[in-house]
Structures are given as structure tokens and as C-alpha cells.
Amino acid sequence: MTDDGASGTTAASTALRDLLAFEDGNALRLLCAPEGDAVVHRIAVGMDDLAPGRPGTLLLAVGAAPDAATVREAALRGACAVVLGEPPPAAESLDAAREAGLALLVREGGVGWAAVAGLLRSALSYARAGLDDAGDAVRGPEAIPSLAALAARVAAYVRGSITIEDTQLRVLAHSATGPDADPLRRAVILGGRVPDWRVAELRRSGLLRALWTARDVLHRPADGDTPERLVVAVRSGREVLGSIWAAADGTALAPDAARHLRTAAGLAAPLLVRERLRESGTAHRRENALRGLLHGVGDRRTHAWSLGLSPDTPCAAVVAEREPARADDRALEVLVLELAAHRPGTGVLRDGDRLALLVTVDASAADHEAAVLAVVRELDAAVSSSPDCAPVWLGVGPVGPPERAAESYQRAVLVMRALREREARAAATGAPRPARYADAAGAGAAVEALRILDAVRPVWESGDGPVHELIRADLAGGGELVRTLAAYFDTGGDVTAAAGRLVVHPNTLRYRIVRLRERDGVDLDDPDTRLLLTLAARLATASPPS
Image 1 (tube, rainbow, N blue to C red):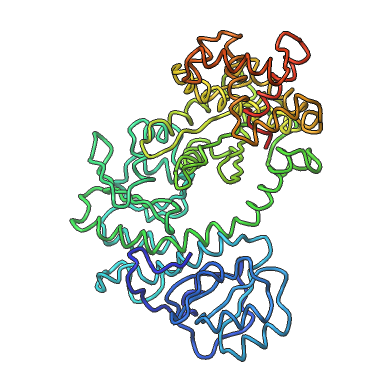
Image 2 (cartoon, rainbow, N blue to C red):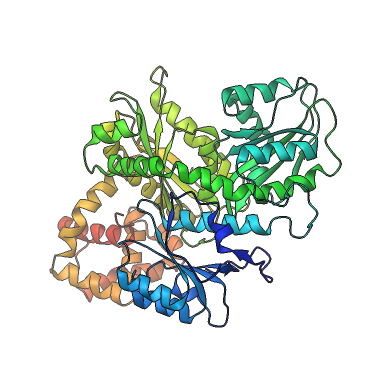
């Protein structure tokens, strides 16, 4: 999508040279310099986001071939710079860029398009930060080279102590600590991150959740020995990158401290993205190791070693899935932020509407399964307490060593599917909503039933007997028979209960059963026929493996 700034109004002009000043070679490589110094107004992702007549667009050529045709087409549509993906472009692409007078860059291997877009958009935000107040002292006339320099500058204007933290509440930079600094600030700086007891307190009070969702500076009044604090989230678009905290240090904060902090949040965004990119090589390797461990691909001992896990570390896979209908929902984002702040060692893989987690447990814990469920219970509470989040199902796999993580993941997926189907049945019958999280024991026989159905599905789908033909014809016509059989079998043949579930009169259901016997020649008293029909109904209504 095209980035025209948060307000959607005319964007500020930013020289490409200044934009790339925030990139230290980890994400992009300049292959061909532009004529003069290109001016960038916006970032476009993909050819479809380029609009003729709107010059000054830096194009991320996502999905396009890294060839001369792409470069020429981008130039015709007004792009001033093009970032191509892998493999490296051929000489013809460079010639096309020189002829068009635009800049040509290539994305470095191992760096995703999302990281590149985040870096460039954050740098563009930096260029615009404080433009509504050209005299803002925090911004200054020159680019701020580092988070440490930013912290020092902001501290001088807010008249307090500054810490800049990432979403895991690790301290990335801080201002000088004065003699009157409170004990909490000293503990945070010395430990390099917010202590666990403090994180728990922030979560209980709701301040942490408010921070990740608020768009403005939050104020926390002085409380006993804890001085007044201001905090603001640092964002790149909708993504939260970290936070900036200002604490009174012996004297009250400046009256306009909140205004300076807002500007600082915009200036910090590209610096935080750059900090993240420095870790991206390691993060990329960790992601590949986690994916291999959970999906059983490659050498499991090597994957565990890459993740810093010893061969006997107790761990369990957890699968979280949201309702797919809510494409703009923040539920999974809330989970990721909760994990980053409260359990930074947890491995997280995002795949569409699903999160796959690898939760480690202290080996000395008395009950490893209970320890994992306690973590999942907190995650469920974090999502459930947020009114803007759609429901999330959390399936928990068994605890075991890292080399058994793939088995744990497979079982977690089954549990999650069982929870989803249990809730659908409860909604159909008007029963109370069941819990949205469980392990295999909590999900009961449904897990084994799904495992058997998954094994039977290929056999059933390849069958060609009379029952198969009847079910296929019914499904092609809307599936009334399948729904009838599912309700009839699920209620143990209770016509009244089944009719209530289908919202039809009991006589209507009796007529359907009689018609099945007399017109279709289906004998429901025959155990083999009944088994085939039961399997057909369950396979048609059960979620397929994914």
C-alpha cells in the first residue's frame, strides 16, 4: 500500500540521500545513484500501488521480476527509486535505471520486505516528525545519529531521566543518571531491562496494555517513592516498535515535556527499526530454527542449539488461532506484545491467522504442564480483556524435550481444532461458551477423534459406494442430509433434540429419516451403513487438517 503519511495529506519532501542515511547496509544496497538527489514523497509496495502523475515514489517491487522491464515500468509510473528483490538484477536493469535517471537498490538476502518497508517508512516519519512545530528543540537542525544521542537530547528538554525500550522492555538507550534517580530507574538501567516484578505490576494496572494501544503520551502520577512518569509508544505505521519513558529526576518534569516526548517518538522510529535490523540476521536464523523444530524439518539438535535450548529443556508447543473473518483484528498482535514483555524467551512464528509458540519451562518447576497452562491462561486473559480483540483459541501440546517439539506442535493443532469445533457445537445448541484454551487432557476425546478422522479422510474421499454417492450429491445440493445426520447422530438418535438443534419440527426430521430409508434405500439399523454415514457427517463438518 502507498504511504502518504499518517494524515493522508500532502507529504513532506525528503531527499533519498537523507532517507538512506538511516540504513547502515544491513537491508539495502545502492546499485545505481539517481540523477541529482531524488526527492521521496511516499513509499509504495508493489506495482499496483504506483499511480501515474504522482512523482516522488520509492517503489518496493514486491512480487515483480528483478529485471529491466520492471525498472522501465516503474519509471513510466513516476517512481524516483526502485528496490528490487532477489536474485540480484542483471546489467540490463542497471542500464534501464541509468536511462530513466532513477535510483536502483536491491534488498539484501535474509531481510524480508516487511523489514525494508518498516525501515523506510520509519525514516520517512523521522523526516516529518516535528514539522507541525518547526521550532521544536528536540528535533534540531541535523539528524540524530543514535538512540543514546536522542535520549540525552530529550532528557535536557523534558528536565527528567529518559529510557528508550523495545517491546520486550529491554533498555536500548538511556540518559545520564542523576544523583536523585529513583531506585526503579537504577534497577532498570543496571539490569538492562524492566524487572519481572515491575512488568507484572504494569500488566496488573493495565498501563502496559494502554501503552501498546494509545496514540498519545500517557501520564503516571508520582506514587510514594516512585516519581512522576510520562511514557509514549514508538510506532512505524500501526506496528509498535518500543517506548520512551521520562521520569522526574529530583525536580518536576517540564510543563511541555509531553510535546517533546511526542516529537521524540517520531524521531526514535527509524533508529529502533535500524536496531531491530542489526539483530535481523540472528532473528532470521532463530526463526528458521524454530520453524524446523516445530515442523520436524532438519536436524533437531542443531535447531535447539540455535535457539539456545539444552537437549533436556522442558518445552511445549502452543498454537493460537483467531477467527479468520476479523482480518483487521489485533488479537494476535496483543499476544505477541504480551509475550515480548512478559516471556521474552518464547519462540513465536506468525502464519496468517495463526501463531505457533514454543514455551519453555523452568526444569525445577514441580508441574511442567501446569506451568505451561498458567502462561496460556494469562495470554487468554490478555486477549479476552481487550474489547477490540476477536476470540482466539489456544491449543497446548504436551511438555517434552526440544527434539519432541514437532509432536507437541501437531497435538497442539489438534487441540486448537477441537476447541474451535466444541465452541461451534455449543453455539448450535445454546450451551454456555466453553473455555478457549486447553491441553490434550482438557480437550478430551475430541483430540483422538480428530486424529482418526484425519487418517480416515483420504480413504473416504477415494470411495465410490452408494453411501459415498448419496453424500456427495447432497453436499453438492446444499448439504441438508449431512446436517440432518450430524444432528441425529450427535444427539444419539433423539429426534426431538436433533430437531431442536436444526430448528425444524420433529415430524420434519422423522420424514427425512423415513425418506432416507424408503427413497434412498439407506438402512440406518445396519451397523456398517451407520458407521459410514457417521463418518461422512463428521468429515463434512469437521475442520480439515492444516
